[in-house]
Each structure stands twice: as C-alpha cells, then as structure tokens.
Image 1 (cartoon, rainbow, N blue to C red):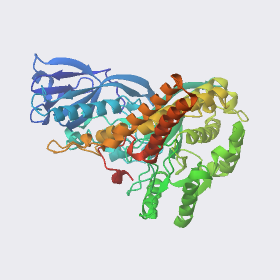
Image 2 (spheres, helix red, strand yellow):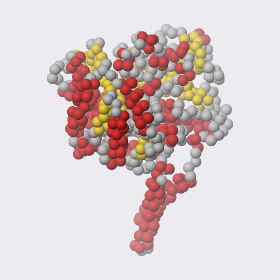
Image 3 (cartoon, rainbow, N blue to C red):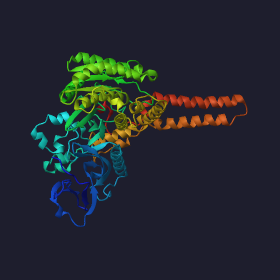
Image 4 (cartoon, rainbow, N blue to C red):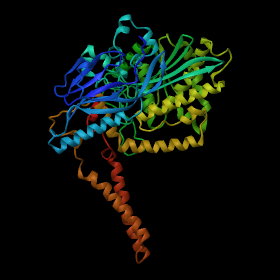
Amino acid sequence: KISTEPEQVDRHITPEKFYVEACDDGADDVLAIDRVSTEVTLTVKKDVPPSAVTRPICGILGTIRLVAGNYLIVITKKKKVGECFSHAIWKATDFDILSYKKTMLHLTDIQQLQDNKAFLAMLSHVLNVDGFYFSTTYDITHTLQRLANTSPEFQEMSLLERADPRFVWNGHLLREFAAQPEIHRFALPVMHGFIAMHSCSINGKYFDWMLISRRSCFRAGVRYYVRGIDSEGHAANFVETEQIAHYNGSKASFVQTRGSIPFFWSQRPNLKYKPKPQISKVVNHMDGFQRHFDSQIISYGKQMIVNLVNQKGSEKPLEQTFAKMVNSMGNGMVRYIAFDFHKECSQMRWDRLQLLMDQLAEQQDEFSYFLVDSEFRSNCMDCLDRTNVIQSLLARRSLQAQLQRLGVLHVGQRIEEQAEFEKIYKNAWADNANACAKQYAGTGALKTDYTRTGKRTQWGLIMDGWNSLIRYYKNNFSDGFRQDAIDLFLGNYSVDEVESVSPLHIQKDWKFLALPIIMVVAFSMCIICLLMAGDTRTETLAYVLFWGSASFGTLAIIFYNGKDFVDAPKLVQKEKMD
C-alpha cells in the first residue's frame, strides 16, 4: 500500500504517561505508555490530557531498561533520502532518550548514578553514528528479489513482522512492541548502513539508480574485537549491498555481500600497529563454516567467494585455511577465488584489478542479476577498503548489462563514457565505503580516491595514512567503549539493577596505571637532561642514558603486555566474542 505520510507526528508527555500519535493520516489511535507500570496500550486522541506537553517526533525507535529504569527512545529529526518505487525513504538524524522516571532521586548510590550516566552515553554514541534509515510504507530490509518471491500473506504483514531480523538494528528495543500485534504500526524497523538514491539520465532516458547497504546486527561490533564467526555461523561486519536500476516500470537488482572470513579467529588489539591474527585451535571450524554458507545459499543461492587478503605475511594462514575449508566442504554451490590485492596492485598498478574482473567475468555472466538466485561474497581483512573497491567494479559491470537490456544504453556504449552518471556512481560507492568503514573501524574508508576518480593519487595515500593513524588510536584506546555501546544497544548485554558489582567498575592492577606515568616522567627527565647540561659531558651523558633507558625499558614492558593496556570491552566477556 502506498500512502502519503505526514512529516511528523506528535508526542505528548504527562507525569503519568507518554502518548504517541499514529503515523497514518487521519488515524485516531494513540499509543499510551504508562511511565509507572510500563504497560503499553491503545487509546484515542481525545483521551490525551490538555495539560500534556506536546512535541513533534518522527517515530519510536524502542525502549530499553537501564539502572534508573525504562527509557523511551524516539526519532526527533529525519531527512528524506529519496523515493523507492513511490515510497519515501528517510534517514534518522536526531534522537531523544526519555526517562520513564521523573527524577533520579530513587538512585541513592553514587555508583548507580555513574553507571546510568555511562549507559546513556553508550546509547548516545551508537545513535550518533551516521546511517540509520527507515520507511513507514516500504520494507527496506529485503532485496527486490526476496520481495518478489513472497506470498500474499507476507505482503499483508506489518513491516515489523516481515522485516529481515538480520537488518533490524532496533529489534531488541522493539521486543515489547513485537509481542503486541495491535501496536505494530507504531514500531519502525530501522536499518543501519547506507542508502543513496539518484534520478539519472543517459541518452535522454531518465531512470532511478539506488545503492543500499544493509549492516547485519548479528555479530556486530568494532574492527578488532569482532572478527570471524560465532557458533551460529554469523560473520562479523556482514553487509548486504544491493544496486537497483529502475526504468520505465522495469527493475533490475544486483546483490553482493561482504563478511569476515567465516571461521573462528581473532585479532585482539595489543598496541602494535597490526596485531597478528590468531586462528582458534580448540573449536571445530567446519560446524560454523558450514552453517554460514548454508545460510548464504538459502538466502542468495550460488556463491562466488572473492578473498582479497594478502597471501604472505600474517594474513597468509587465513587465506590458506579459507581455501582448505571450501575444498573440504565440497559444495558445488560455492566457488572460491583468492586475489592478493596488495601484491597485484603494488606500486600504484591499480589497472591490474582488470585481471580479477577478467577472472570473474564468466561467473558473473552466468549469475546474471535480479531473479537469478546467485551472488558474490567478498572479503578482505576488515571487509572495508579493498572489498568496496572490488564490489564497485563488479556492480558497474552488472549495471552495464542491466542498462543495455533495459534500453537505456545503446549497443556499444559504456557506463564509463557517461560522464555525468559516472560521477554520481563513483561518489555514491565512495560514500558507501566511508559509511561502512566509520560504522566498523571508526574512520572513513581507505582507497576512496580510486573509487571516486578511477585513479590512485598521492593525496589519497596521504589521507589513507591519516585515517590509518586515527584507526590505530581508536582501535587501541576507544574501541572497548564502542563495543560496549553496540552490545548494550543490540541487547547482547542487559542491565541488571541488582548487580552487586558493575562490570563498568572493574579495577585494573596498579601497574597498568603506574607504568605509563613512569614512562612519561622518565622521558621528560631525559629531555630535561639534554636541555640542561651537567657540569661535564660525561655526567650529562650518564643522566641521558639512565632516563632514556628507563623510558624505553618501561615502553618495552608496556608493549610486551599490550593487551592489558588497551581499552577493552567490559560488558560482554571476551569468550563470548571469540
């Protein structure tokens, strides 16, 4: 059903209840949330007290329980991304977290107040990460192909009931709403990822081009704390990317997925620039591996795995294990190709990516697009920078065939020759890379100069170096908080009000506080001795050697025990994430 939705709805607040109006035009129903009993019921507009404080909102994200009690999270601002087959698609740009309690006086313990404040900061952090999208009339969690193969009964379901749970990031927050079908229309399934929509023209023919990346909420987290798969076969940083072309009533779709190498491995931060990946030696890798690809085949059909990791150095064992496990699985629906991205494209030879495109051409022609059940699954170490470059090239090749078949491109014409569209295409894929990278690694993507311009530039290398430094800092000194925030938001950790010892207040051994101070003091003394020479050169040299040795010795101890000095997650124990 296509409907014109209002820009905003009203939220009314009284000391006893929250009231939220329905999104439907002319609807009289109002959702009432009791702030004391937490009961959720339906009422009508005339029952809203005149004394209620009224504020406009764009929808309900859900509810969550923290130390101080329940909180209601609402979307307060949105921005229209575009229209998907006459349905408005929105990006949520601002949120509000409302306490059911009128005051915090019931929290008498200072630690409880601190914990509640910390949990609120975590929620705010997740909500401030760009990339939350929703629609009140269209299911953005499914690909065109999945929607085309559904039953009439599926079409009659509410958006919350029919949404793909992998891509509903507020699924945990909406658990109470999900239990009451009569209030489903007040609950918005919200996707996290990236959406770009453009009206384009080639040869005077206007068509819609869309790029949608859906980030899975299963095994979600940050770069170094979430790698590999879990026991259910869910891969870290799993993203489904769909490219859609719509012309003159015809629709064409090309789907790719990315995900962490699907067996049990980890890469914990330890202050080193690039921690060594560790493949688990105590679990049966094939169980999770098999589950992952069984799920992939059910969802997408045939698989073409494109593995872009280095085939030497610390990444080599990962590639070897991946190839070995695909061969051991012996599934004709899964094919595997390894391409050492960095080796092949070294010394700015990015033209050599055509070698990979040539290898994949026959397979891609066989897979075709839209209603043919098949897809590409690609990955590098982080499923970010290298992966996005290759996915954009594969998507362009597919789009070339689609636009020719739809009659937009003439025979012999190439997308690369359409300057106006090519600029839109490249920038959208580069923006997609940045969005996925910020959500997983905390910074914009690397190598986007190639995606935007088709060339590797010196300025691009400088920006990659800068982003790499920021990633190093975040991976070691702030990703523990980021991982905790995601685990709280997604329900991997639930706040226990009667918990005697909060996991947020686990104290580190004194040496982990003392050693960095000692190192700074020793290094400062070394500099002072250099600037303020002693009576003799020998005396000055002795002081410099002493304090220099003390500072570097302390630094060596810190790096030796690197894992103990990084900002590690506190809410979910490491064993649950390995």
